[in-house]
Image (tube, rainbow, N blue to C red):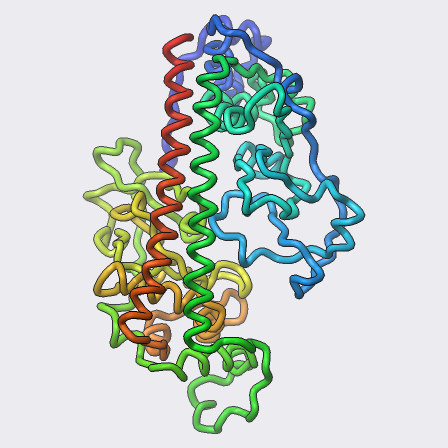
Amino acid sequence: MTAVRLKIVRAAWLEEGGRRLDCNPYMSGALEARDALKRLACHKDKLRDVTLGMFDSGRESRNWVDDERFGVRYMGSSAINLADFANLPLISNKQVARNPKLLIEEGWSLITRSGTIGRMAYVRPDMAGLACSEDVLRVVPDLERIPPGYLYAFLSCRYGVPLVVSGTYGAIIQHIEPVHIADLPVPRFGPVFEQEMAQAIDAAAAERVAASRHRRAALELLQAKIEWNDHSSPVSHAPMASSLLGRMDAFHYSPRVEAGRASLAAHCGVRLGDQVERVFEPNRGSRLKVTDPAYGVPFLSSSSVFELTPRAEYLVSRSLTPNLEGLLLSDCDVLIPRSGQLGGIIGRAVLPLPMNVGQAGSEHLVRVRCHSPSDAAYLWAVLASEPGYWALVGTAFGSSIPSLDSSLISDLTVPWLSERDRQKIGALAEMAVAAQNKGNELEAAAVALLEEKIRKES
């Protein structure tokens, strides 16, 4: 059943809008945001006056490469909010040289301009130099006119987003162009407050950069310990006839999959299921959505857990959702999407953030439930490593939509290194989770402070 949305509309808005009676212009929140900003006594600049430019990269075909020596990581519009860019595809260096507008720079604000429009990201240091889709608008702040972090905080707050999405005047647009937001009013609260906001946003960015560094260090240490250095070497022999009784699909015996399995098994290998509490997929069932947080639990999709700030799209009923207990995320979980196209999120391991523990997660996420958070952190590094990923996706079955099975994952052989090594690797993974969560808290607090200032002064 679709929830009904109700709203009281001012007569002045109807008159202003030519007495149009379609819902979209009045449900976006843009008119309320515009009126709140109008009531502010402070000076307001037009967006175009505090930026050096707003542009996209232009539409063109993409030339992909496989080797990092010849390419640059490329973010599609759905990737700007990812926490980890290590698995992004590579676009040719030659194409980037022909079109420098593909590259993004630190301090810019990114806005998705088509599809799901209005999603935003702040370009932190570890994103600078990446290539980005033409479906993302680059907003380049004028450093002499406005602090970059403050501009992003305003654009991404609950007063900025509706104006961006609506083109500032209330009608929902399907594609953002610079002209649509050039006159968007940016309130100016003085250099002291704006610098405070900017410093908070930059501090959040620094925490997220630290999270990326810790993740990379954990994976590099794990791969060094198991001596993973040649993921593409061909198999030295054909599979034994006895093994074909279980699997006959070619991908299961591909060189990378075989190399991944062999590397994991060669160093203190143990059966994964014997080292954890259990590996399972929650039972599927209907999701009864509710709107009151007192009666609902946030529900995360299998793709949202990879985002910088995983957010639930809706709440599911605490009392009426079947098997709710099995859906709730634990800090002892490693999460693995169980279905999708190879090369996508299927088989990509991720740890839940503290902000998401206790929330519900999709039944399409396999849970590797460990005995402790430290075990989960270590096993995340094992399963998220390059050999771990190939060993995981090598268990996938099905040709149209490949799927993983919890029992096959449970049967994987994984390295169970010395306690000292496990602690060192797990500690790095835990530091990554803590830093990412801290960054989210810092940004949310800064945006909330700006929203409160606008609310009080309007």
